[in-house]
Image 1 (tube, rainbow, N blue to C red):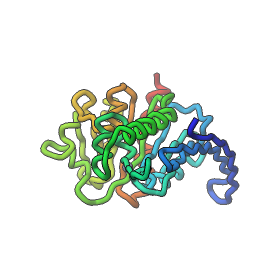
Image 2: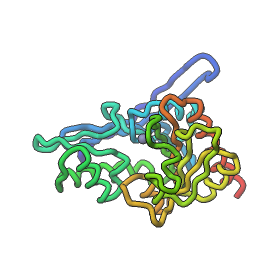
Image 3: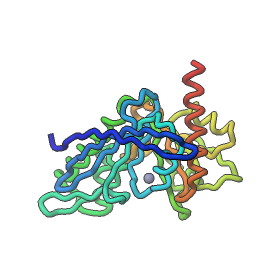
Length: 260
Ligand SMILES: [Zn+2]
């Protein structure tokens, strides 16, 4: 095997409102070319049906939001540790490649994300595909995948999903609360979650799981596979807003599970 596995139990004892926290963390160093990406899995023994995932390590607000939400350490949380950058850089025979780790879940996505920044060849494609395969192992048993992302107040927002917007072709339905920041929203593959968030007057987009462009993102992968998925998206620095959105999504999902 090209990676080794280590399991470390870390015990945190902190004062204050959180009293005692116990966090179990698995670290797995994965070699890609001459580089290493560390897979981090918090609470690996959790039996919860939700698994949280962050693949963009530079989106620090989202990691902080999840850790503040999950003070009782109940949920699996998978994230990539690699130079704190959005893209994963790796090399092979002195050629350097990079991919957006949220564009490697399809062949077309891999080719496009390699070509975006570097050259694309068969070996680089194969290594990116293997990375995607390893990432999916950490979420394969989830009943719900919740990814966390941050954006910046530039072009991309929930308005990108309106008719005529850059993401319109991927969109089945969109609901916008005009009093919310357009950078804070939920993106989901699941009609039930969309409907419930809309009832709560929360910004939400429903992906068109049949006609969406297969860009290699995890949302499209989950949409095609029928895996319930939500992305909790907030503007960089909107910590409280992102915690609020995480709580709302979890309460809807778990409310449905317990009512069944
Ligand atoms: Zn992201």
